[in-house]
Image 1 (cartoon, rainbow, N blue to C red):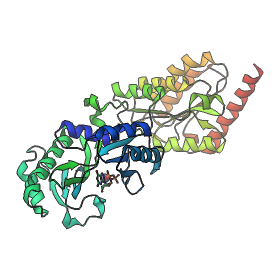
Image 2 (image 1 turned 60 degrees about the vertical axis):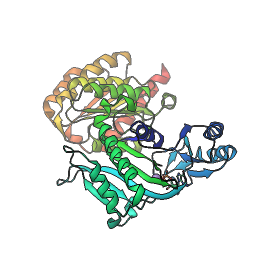
Image 3 (image 1 turned 180 degrees about the vertical axis):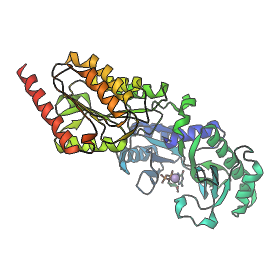
Image 4 (image 1 turned 30 degrees about the vertical axis):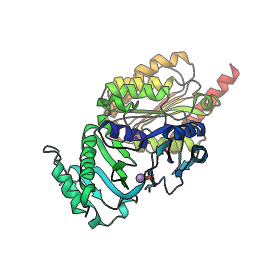
Length: 418
Ligand code: GDP
Ligand code: MN
């Protein structure tokens, strides 16, 4: 899922007319001080990481002066919260909180619902999981009919809210649903939704997750890779993703695992798995013989030969790799001749450029006999370190790992001698 930092979610809130505290996101203590000075009131300094529970972890600090904001930012920046490094803080005007509420939406994929569920609770500021069921109003929203103001008024009133707070709360919850729809969210949450002492409502926090499959229609998200990808994408990652963005036939997943500098130190192979489980076996096979992967690649779901070809070319483009390993360790339920064609075309282009380069191919599954014939015929005479294996070695990580290791060592000797 495409997850958003609090400050980005709040930008979308603001555009939709949901009140948010006045604030700025910054990445240094000095900028935090300046931001606090401009806001001109006591502020709250908040860690921007894709995790909840920042308050408990010391990532949210209330301060009175710009100097204190600088100190707080200095403490929070560089902190790790749930394993995530804090690189930015949000500096926001402090709210005089009278009451904290919770409002949220998730997609419930259970058969009888299959749609958004709206939740509202007067128990805000704490984990919604720990709020008793009878203190949460829920509503399965009919996406065709949509949500009406009377629905949210009912929810707010059903939780015991009275007087002047009812209307602004109901209005905010309605707008929350509008953002949820407009941004194709899977989850959108405000905790706490704050009622201030002077009777105003604010989204004081935001947790937003959009559907990866909808990222393409939201250029405003500015997401470079439309699927779970928790690091800043490298050039290699972006090239890999470009194959997916324009061709939906099967999948190719490519992620850079080591920087070119690390790969240059030696001991790395270009890595290509078929399916997650097989890919794990292959990684294990390499680990056991002391080799590392420069990249992680996975072509599965019956991809076309062209997609496999592009993936192999990308893997082979990594300077300093000492071999190429296709780890098709399981009986893949896809027509493997597409892999065979893609591999043959890419390797016939690449191998003449690097004599003696180790290539170990393990490919089994549907159309295996034909696929093996394509590989053997297509790669005959292309390098004397090309080894091709079939179902005889399915799951045989020890043997295959050993072959990769032996060929890499031979290749290193050649390189040293040259
Ligand atoms: P989370 O712990 O990651 O969910 O971070 P939150 O943004 O929810 O902040 C944690 C808590 O800090 C909230 O539940 C509030 O109690 C408190 N807090 C956040 N902003 C303010 C503010 O402007 N004024 C006051 N008084 N408390 C705040
Ligand atoms: Mn929160």
